[in-house]
Length: 85
Image 1 (cartoon, rainbow, N blue to C red):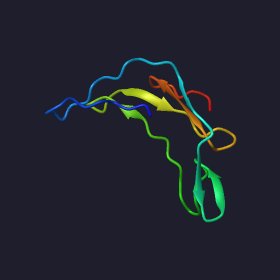
Image 2 (cartoon, rainbow, N blue to C red):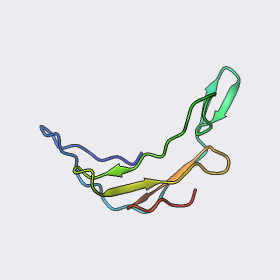
Image 3 (cartoon, rainbow, N blue to C red):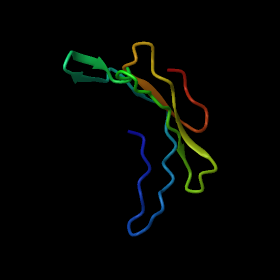
Image 4 (cartoon, rainbow, N blue to C red):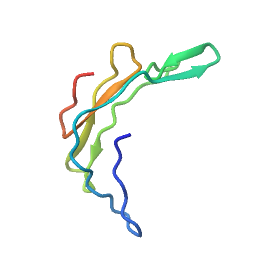
């Protein structure tokens, strides 16, 4: 995943390295009815877009796309602009 490492013995998070867009695709989970696309919400559940922000909560560092058409993947881009699914 796209994550920010923490500093040892501190509550601070580091600034992640600038990256190219990362693809997460073909994600599935298994339920009682078989395999389901990862981003297809269960009954009455919602899928949320979560942005990575800086320590001051004033700048977006990385942005995910909305789920792709098959609802089994998404992309994450460095910066405040979400990529296309």
